[in-house]
Length: 143
Image 1 (tube, helix red, strand yellow):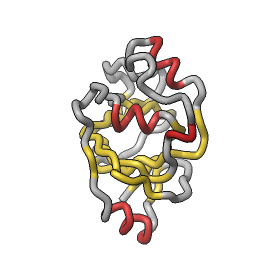
Image 2 (image 1 turned 60 degrees about the vertical axis):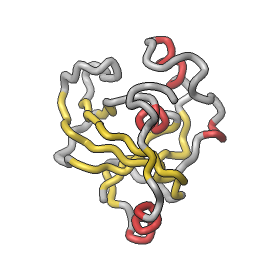
Image 3 (image 1 turned 30 degrees about the vertical axis):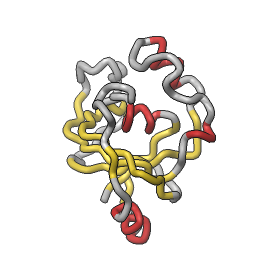
């Protein structure tokens, strides 16, 4: 199955807090399930950006990178890739990957990420597929 590496803490917003668009400079023809891989890198501006725009409540996401696992952390469905998605998460002049049906892995599966879309190696895929998926308590809302 295909995977996308995403800088932390964005995976938490995708899987748990209603972020329904992933902004990319490039499109893809892939549609369907897409594993979300939480990269080791950290975007120190992400939480403040989302809070200032009212996309997440203040204080809901921990600013401590140690509290955000790395590796394969969940799966979403990639439904469309467009330039003009109406989501408040969509950034101008980017490709908007519309994501639905987020499910978080009960336990993250460590593995190295890659640039672009990549195929999860067989041994990692077996481990990922053996772990229970947990949907958000209320899609688009905090728990």
